Image (cartoon, rainbow, N blue to C red; front, side):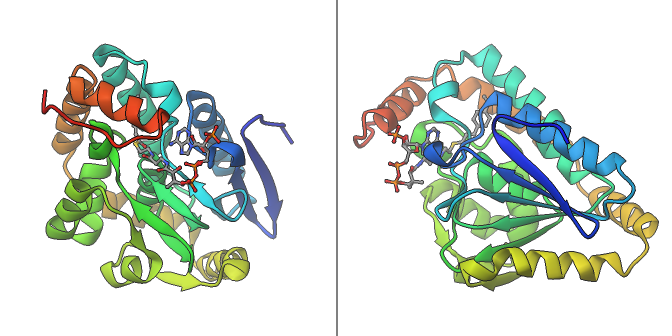
Length: 259
Ligand code: DAK
């Protein structure tokens, strides 16, 4: 099996398990990690002995604490829009439209691009210490990997609007109540719970499941995703974006001028 720099993969009883493995950066998604995730997901999807894929994060603290801020803070608007499009194609749209069901096992912080990865997955379960949010506006940017669209699709416009505009995190119980996740378990039981869920999925027809994924996804329009990409790119050209990302790195509160 191929060795990756930022993820690990293993197989067990027809389940492909992908663990994002940058614990020092709380598993933040940089370009390389996104490319590796694409490759691993593609390989598992093509392998017909694999019936379900589980995606999780290494360590006890984070699933994925977002896109790698230290990488994207230097992008200009053109790079921002291009990378948003590329990221969606390689990972977020790719996961959403994969034929093999993907379970996100959220083992801690799932923020920004991390929550967006979970939102693109077909099923989400979480450990009781998990915290979820889209904090992008606190950095002067907006969710750029489908979060403005998929969060509202899953939990409704009102709750999505509140989560995105406040940039606040919610805990696992609230996420369960919102329907953002479908199960909460103690952290030590998370992977077992994900594997049990996978076993349930395996009782059914893979062909019919892939048709069902396609049919469910067909409801949603693509127009909103295009608007998100454009506005995401525009946000990279604002003073607020420079201030928001600089404040994160300098560990201080951002002072937004609204420009
Ligand atoms: N990126 C890079 N490094 C991160 C990170 C991130 N998202 N999150 C955490 N880290 C790093 C910290 O900088 C720190 O590194 P050192 O200082 O030790 O070198 C290390 O991980 C441990 O984090 P903390 O010391 O902050 O740990 P705490 O327990 O104090 O806090 C926290 C945990 C999760 C509350 C905090 O780390 C945090 O607020 N993290 C940032 C959350 C966040 O705002 N995530 C980004 C959301 S925006 C794009 C498309 C989409 C996006 C971007 C670009 N393109 C197409 C270009 C999406 C953007 C987002 O995801």
